[in-house]
Length: 57
Image (cartoon, rainbow, N blue to C red; front, side, top):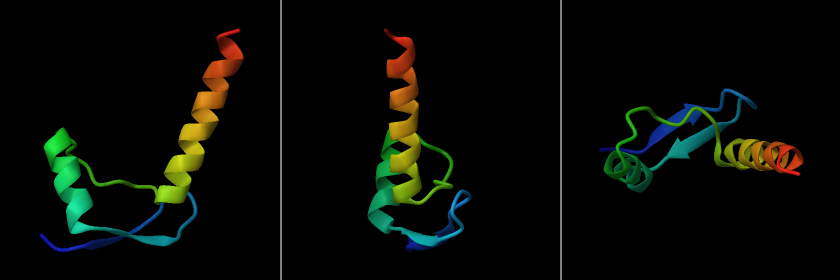
């Protein structure tokens, strides 16, 4: 398995999906490659968590 270069669907920046990350995804049972770069995944997760906190009050 070799590293893959993927284009983020949110920001359009290229990022590398490393061999190690691919193994991790495979171990977790994930079938699809990521579509967002790590920065956009982090931002999306933070936004989702803040949204959920607003409704849990």
